Length: 90
Image (cartoon, rainbow, N blue to C red; front, side, top):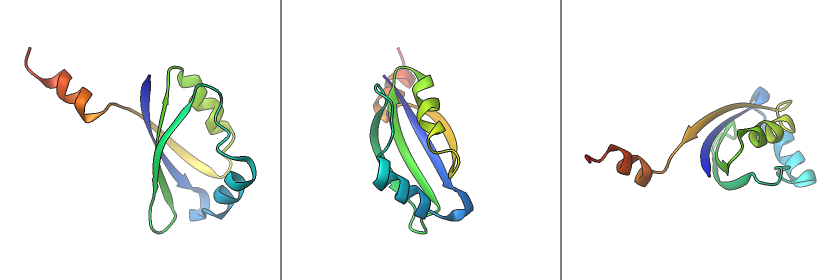
């Protein structure tokens, strides 16, 4: 499974439509896309979210439900343990 850091910027700096939709419809993630965790800035302008999946197309499907009210940046990431293992001398 691949991990992705999702940086969400709430359009117009307004989180209200995002939370309203979330409460009405849930995360709307397709089968196979797993939510790991998220953090929201104290001013409610940004959300940093970690998602996991095998198929990046699942991310595109999920983003399509939200892109009218959220701008997305998707960054493939790995855990610190994985990075350390890749960087350790052989």
